[in-house]
Length: 444
Image 1 (cartoon, rainbow, N blue to C red):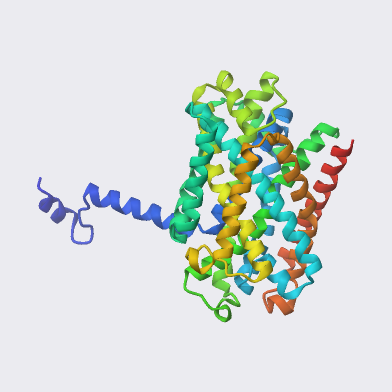
Image 2: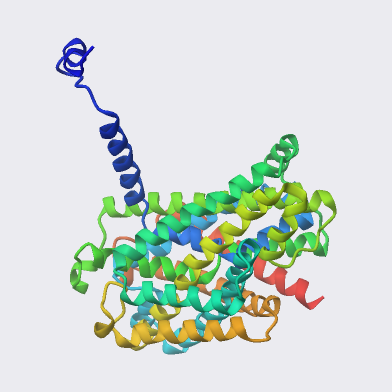
């Protein structure tokens, strides 16, 4: 039967669609979905950087399935904290450092920004080392070549690529994190144990379990995540044509609703990745007795004899993709904070000549991170320093964010409602307890 005959048979209201047209429709629907996912997806993916992957892998190797309940519990706290920062950016048209500069004392602003910059740059350096190590698992290329090539790619994308290109690239890199789901499936876990560990919170009150729990919480609710989300909400407004500050100030109900969905989906994605990393290493390393893993690279390497080369390769691909995403997030985050502190022009929407100080900080931060990657500094010690600074910064930063988002002078009518306020203060308390617990385990 001809296509015309088929079309007549099915009637005028159901025209025949060719396979090419159907494929194009599916492609357009997928692109529409990617457009719906905004800064929240990138923030969630960047949160699972190689340093975080190492922490989650270590938790799974040390504690097995007993910590699988943690990602679902952390999810609402992550969503609350990141949404508050997104709302702050949407309502004020400023990042966190910009709000502190305008409404608070410099004695509060400078220590926060200095601590954030040091921690971001150190973590970026450790992440570059992790990327190089993961690539070497797949291809025997010298570390120097890898780090310099990756650095050149990242700097070129940040400096000369458009903000739209940067956003699209970050979204595609974020999707590569599903490789951890594949690695977890290939690990062939006992699903009855998985369900029990997810639905039945268990916790051994000893130093090892406590240190793992607080390390996971501290890594998940990291300060650079909060700074980045607020700044990206402002970038999103600029990309939509809101160039003047007066037009940026304020946010509609619809915008805040979309932002809440964006953040929720991004944090759900981040927590799913965390969940499957813990699951994968619990099913392999913990079960085989390899319970002392000190990095994401070591976890990927150890998976080969236990779950096969495919699982190891998927784990390594996840490290590479999220590392390439996280490094520019860390260096740009430092640049946003410093530029807002001194009132410089700052935006990835700007060309190099329009915001020279902003891009100079990005370049300098990246170079320092590369130097750390090439140095003889032990990457574990570097990550320890970054974690220490982030941990010390997190509780006061959450208190600052809660105070800002409840301040009518700053937020107008967009101060927090009772529900988000309660969840925000619970999150602040959880971060504070985790930081104090982590410090206690370090001092023992």
